[in-house]
Length: 299
Image (cartoon, rainbow, N blue to C red; front, side):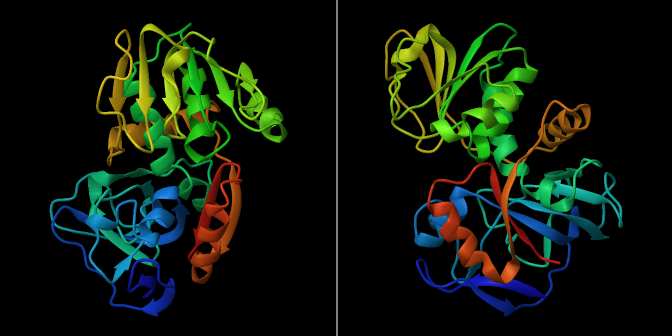
């Protein structure tokens, strides 16, 4: 099968023929139709991110949408021919930049029927991050105020919609050209972080997708969640803090698919590239100016 191999961190991403994997008991073999690209991908390629979890040479990527081709012994939740999406193995290597992946069947869920494989591949890591922050960690309730930084980005634009689906009043930060997009997907208020200050917004939940943001806007008793760099120590005595690292989550994927099918969640794909142009996809992502997600197509 074809796969994108990296022989050294910081080195080129090379399209190479490698052996096709076979599923072990409880695993499925998925024919990958599309693979999402995330900041952790290009950070890992450069030698940071999850580089310490990888063994060289390695195949990057965690977001997958495709079709089950074979099931291992003991699998009862999926069968050959099922269209699935997921984020297998994270933070260990999932090797998604390839034509096939194998992983535990419960790292996948049925793909939302209304989405193409490209759209579905854009969801798992970003949407699960948002879901695990807002639902599992913060338990956002109707009427609460939620502030999301980098709200037009991959995780951000999904977090806005998930918070709205929970009944929250949502404030997003982004540059002015992205304000209309954020209003369209449900943001109640948008702040241009280059000219505005959100320190006085008095929010219940602050989702920091940038890193190093001030918690000044969090009301006493509120929650500050640091996503890219984590927050593992108190940063203000009268608020709660939490780090987060997304993990495979079949139940979360099913809940996300339900939001998609109900029309409460839509994913925005900013750009697509063929598998062999993974390096170009990373270069675009590294600009920090994309809206929504980048996806590789393997077919």
